[in-house]
Length: 311
Image (cartoon, rainbow, N blue to C red; front, side, top):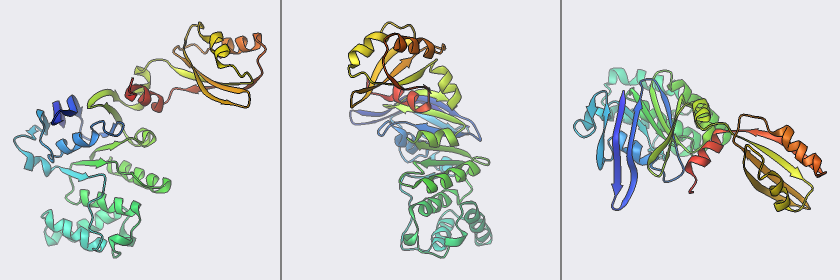
């Protein structure tokens, strides 16, 4: 449905998006992940024809953003990071205004307003001022705005930014519901949100794509890996590190904390083999007092940090 081809956007000497290639299928819920400044918002703005690419192209249903931007815009509903709402209007009046701007005739408008209000959980606040609403409800109004023309593709930029945990769950469930009928593209740097909501995850860093797949696929492609967290009543980290430095399968021994004569470490293991019996044998051989000992499986957060860290 969407083909992104060698897409590049530069601002003076800074390259925000650097020759990315990506294909998005109809009906996918795709999460665009990356640290702040990675190029997520710039990519979405080019996708929705708010910014022109420096080079490369985006084709939506065969149409180029360079040649047919107005036709492509009709296919999109777009929610920027800050919901574009008028605080001095009633929710009903605001959405009715949006419907008129989108060209909905009066015969169709009322039914569309009711349908979208139900979908976005807004019936109880339709006659409240936007100013009175919580941040979560303002986001819902913003999504209703983006949905008003019944677009085929919905683009959400940081849809849960600034929300409390309950509001995040509500918006996440709403996105899942929308994903049953629409192609949804959302940007976020909240990993749990992407893992719980998206069919596919694309990680972008410094303007380039560094990973692409569902959460399980990303974990498989990152290779074997897990951590062993250990707390020892041994005050000298270097002594502990020396005991594990030559152990096959241990990539790194990381100091994670020191407190009252207790040293906390994590053994970063790059192997399919469970090294806990061997590690415990080393600890027992040296007669080190062991306070904590457990294995931590590789998470999407670990992979994200490895792919986006500076060095």
